[in-house]
Amino acid sequence: MCLLPKLNQIKKKTQTIATFRGLNERKAIADGEFSDCCNISLEEYPAVSVMDGYTQYANSTGYALPDVYVKSKKNIMILNDEDQAGNHSVTAYQTSINSFGTATVTETLIFNGASQEFMLHDFDIYGDKLLILRSVNEEMDMWIRGLVWYKTAATEYIDLSQLLGTDYSFPSGLLTFGSRVIILAGTQIHISYFNDISAAKWTTYNEDGVENSKCAQQIELLDDGNFTGCVNYRDYPIVFKENSMYMLLGEYTPFSLSRIDSVGCHRPNTIAICNGKLYFLSKLGVMEYDGGTPELISQSINIDVFDKSNQYGCADNRYYYIGKYIYDTYTKTWFKQKTNFNVVQPQCYFNNSLYIADSNWITPEGESAHEEINIYKSDSGVSADWYFVTKQFHEYQEGKKIISKLIIGFEKDSTTALKIEVSLNKGTFQTVYTWNGTTDFVKEVPVLLPPCDYFQVKVSGTGKTIVHYIKREFRVLGA
Image 1 (cartoon, rainbow, N blue to C red):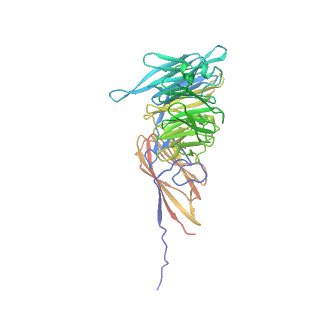
Image 2 (cartoon, rainbow, N blue to C red):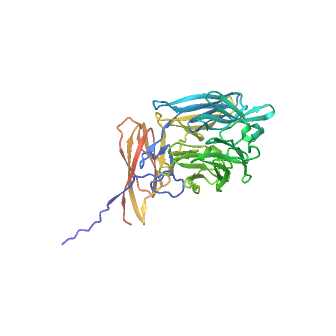
Image 3 (cartoon, rainbow, N blue to C red):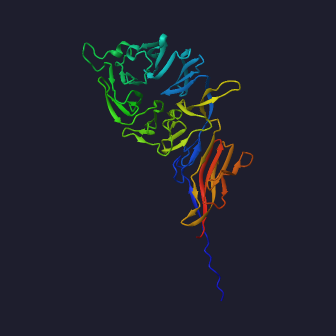
């Protein structure tokens, strides 16, 4: 009797990544995390989706250092356009909802004149109208500080030079708080008289020698240098220094400062409120604050806190933007912003659009190098370029070899291009699949991998696309 050998069939196994977990720039990352990515998000959670593209909004070019930016608070956005070639304009845009429920935008010219004669420090809404804190340069470098209140009947000017001085040390913040206005200047906090911001009332610290609840107040705190910024969070003024943050307590005079933590904000243009939480950049990294102890949330990404070009921040209803990074407050994951700009500087979120700036040094033929700054506005009609790179997948398991095949699931929206690249054993990425719109869109793309020790996958494209999953079908060979 002849007995045939018994064969052990190698069964195929399937591992599916169906929940993506954002960017992690550390050496060891989980299966669903990305080692690199650009212009993607988890709006279609748990799938990966693509952010909107951008259209150009404003630009400035100067042989010195041009200064072009947009900033927003509440329903106000201000465009500051200064090319330092003699032209400087500052314009405010305010949204309002009409009786039909649609938003209208009104435009107010704040300044138009020679460069270096006007400086906008901060702005807010007071009595439903725009209030700005500005300095005007008079002769012999004397800066006249003041508030400009754009009331309905007539614009009101409040000269605060006696309170804030006329030298080159500028105020660092303006905040409205109920019927009060708060100004940060150096190591001092100036709190206006109750429901009266006229110049004389700012120094009315008592009446008939008695301090009452309506009086103005000045608080000085010498520790940790000057105040750097402020924000109204949950109806409490939060003020920052470089290495500390404080809450201003009280509704009537006298107010008091309560120290929150020994973590501060050295870049006030990164302060933003998103999804009910306060975000800002400290010397440790990005902090999240919701009323308890500030928490460091940028451990998994490499934000260079000393690189000024990546320290502009803002927020919409879901995302916090800082430099080239994006934090999703819903899924608590990080992503990267569009990277074909030289320097990414998130500016503000206004009227359902995100504004960002980029900075490039250009050298036209026959001319010297000079800086060009462009402002871009998010546009759902523009197809964005995007990509993501997976972790390194190992092709061995407890001394046994693994042979894999990948299947990537796509959903087409406005996709115009798609590409899959594979790196074997840390080599260069090689293209294994392309789609340019000339053939039928394939919802599942199989990627066959030759034998290797480890591999990495890069998926890129143009236009709105949803990536639902990455399936890894593999066989484990014998020892």
